[in-house]
Amino acid sequence: MKLSVQDFAEIVSALRGEASDLSAQEKRRAVRMSVTSKLVVGVLNDGALGRTYSVLTRDISLAGIGLLQSIALQQGQEFVLSLPRQHGKPPLFFVLVVMHCRPLADGLYGLGCEFVRQAPEEIGKKLLQDQSNEHARIRNSVLG
Image 1 (cartoon, rainbow, N blue to C red):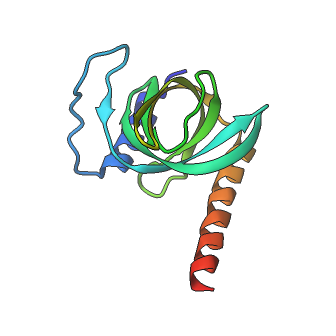
Image 2: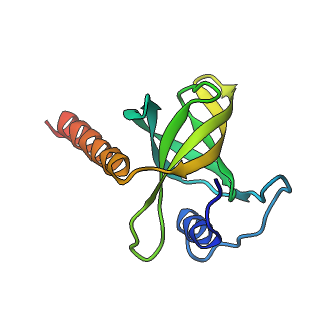
C-alpha cells in the first residue's frame, strides 16, 4: 500500500511543521523525507490491538516509515500507527509491517516499516483511547 500524495504531504507537513522544506535526502524505491516527531503505535496480536507505546520517526516515504523505539519487534510483526494531519483534521491510522529491526544502542532499535493498509476505525479509536488512559495513569501517579 502507498499513501496518497495528498495524505503524504499533509502528514509530512504536520510532522515537520508548516514552514519546512520537503527536499529528499535519498533515492530508494520511494523518496524518503527526513522527519523527527513523536508518534503512538500499538502492536497487533491476531488482529487485536495489544501494547501501545510512543516512537520517534526517522523518515517517511509514500511506501513506509523509519522509526526509533525502545522495543524490538520481529520482522513481519504488524502494528498500528497514528499519523497526524494539518488544519485540525483527524489523524490517519495505518497498519504497518516491520521489514527490519536493528539494534542501534542499548535499548534503542531502528525499524524499517511498510504501510500495509488503512487501519479499521475502531482500532484507531482504541489506540487513541489507550494513549489517553496511559497519560491519565501517569498524571495520577505523579500528582497523586
